[in-house]
Image (tube, rainbow, N blue to C red; front, side, top):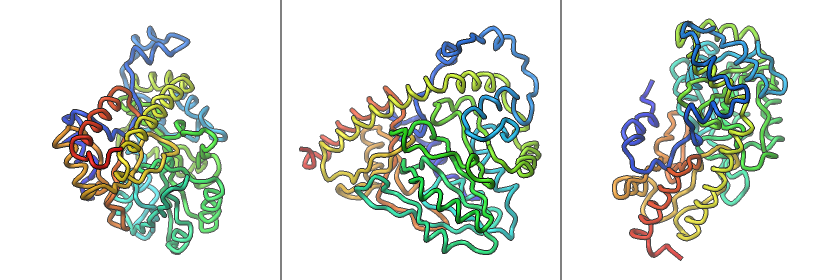
Length: 384
């Protein structure tokens, strides 16, 4: 597999940049802050926790807490993971063979195409971009239909979408499920940003709830803002496939961290408060960002994200997006993610966008001020 472009980029800049403005997670918290949200005060039991091996499937009460976030899924239909990346990797390795075929909309999170490519053929179907519309990036249903082959086994989705922040309209999701059902295609749905939709009425159903061959992937890292816990999960109605995935986990993480499982249960039980807090941070930051863009007309073509904490503006200012991002980090310490990081091996991807993260509080506000200072210095003609 080729290097993971995003992680290579972050290994250079993530912890050295003065202003990390492209973070893909919501604001995190300390253990003390999380424990304070626990109405049952489990601090003593956490301090007394036995640090031995845990169950490969995940602790029973953790699986129950996760199942409470679904409409139809039961605890026995959930496999806990060491983060979401393990789920993307194991699904490709367990479900696919060299004779299979996968369809991936682009741009996408690189694992969604790179891991399947190590097993079988992958076809990329570029998303349709229509500026100045609510759903500016849309799945190309006709393109996916045309890409289906007799051996197509899996369609990989990612909504709320990284990097665009878009959601699928319900009628389009229903049409996509019907198409996959007709051809017996599995859908792996990366749903790690579910819960922080800008308008809750736009929230999509979870694929495991509504499709018998759907696999829902989620994690404590993104919407909950707790990546240090390294707890994720897969949910599916396909019991046989889930058992095969559990067997494959024996070759990977084997089991999860006991303290992380306990802390994840607390977070899931307090999810209403955590997600509301994170939604508030994201919403406030969005208004501040839009004000900045309005003060420099002609700099970007902007569409509000509908869910998640990342957005994907199209750069329309002087020069190109790659140079714009490079100048920001080198001259002002502001880290953005150029769209070249989303290069695909299986389809064309845009080269004139950049990803910006909206999920952190003080980090974002300080970075936005540094970004404004940079633009006033170098892009003064664009200012109002």
